[in-house]
Image 1 (cartoon, rainbow, N blue to C red):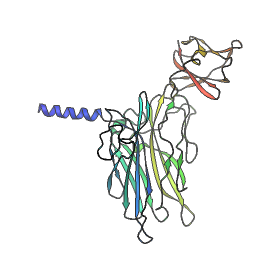
Image 2: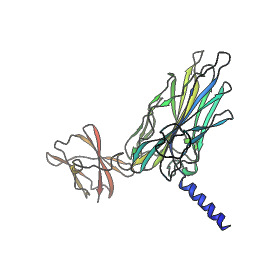
Image 3: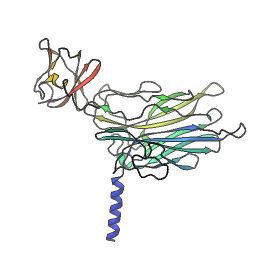
Image 4: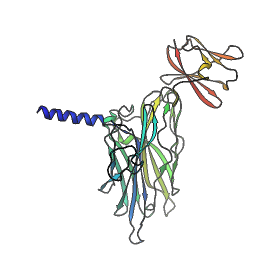
Length: 365
């Protein structure tokens, strides 16, 4: 009995140590040859599942992905990208995926799985893929580590839509967000057949308890047009969110009406950081433009030949609240701001310089 408990404990530890990995993903489809004759069409489609995941010795990996075709059948799709350089341990010709982001504390591996399936006839088919290993700690999906990572596509086969490639995303979902700064997610959608696309925001794989990101007063969150991009103004918490899209595809039928011929979804991760993305704090010559830091009341910014835009200075606290700073005269070569009314804590001072936003980390005593 004792040995059995030891074995069971070891198994539980092994599963938990390699539990999570899914960050983002999408599913696509395309009809492929041979197409048959007019009397006997062949409805063969290439199904592609793309997943963006963690990578490392203690991270779960998938050499294959199980795809449910929506007609009562399923198949095992091998990973087809990246070669074998990552030494993932997959057998045969199965590849290991491709590392597309390698930053300190943030690694993303892109895995592409592909499989062919032939449908018996016309119909509406919901193609799905589900994986138990969704990343933990997703703020807007309670108990995310226990919520499967789920993808689906809706394939409509008819005389109007049989010859069809699904919409595709022209960008990888790996961009991150900055606290208090508008986040834009440009899906870069395109459709090889020129069909009309309408995008909607949806629940992430019907995750229980899912909610949209919190917003500041008068904040906005939504699509700027029928096909995107998403504009989120602005993140108010430094945490991890998941967002999901459904892209619906429409085509004119023989009567001149637009009809739905399919849809695909993307779920993506957005990590909101305290500091500007890719910039922990100002370094070098720009860092020395503000002083003193830490500051008790008055902080100075060297102005002469600095390239700063006038009247465009803001202070951002760690809850994402943005306060516009009033300039006070302080000579011809510098300007000053009075921070005495702000509470003690860590802030970011934001300014516009030569058409770009720059930030300093400021400690208020």
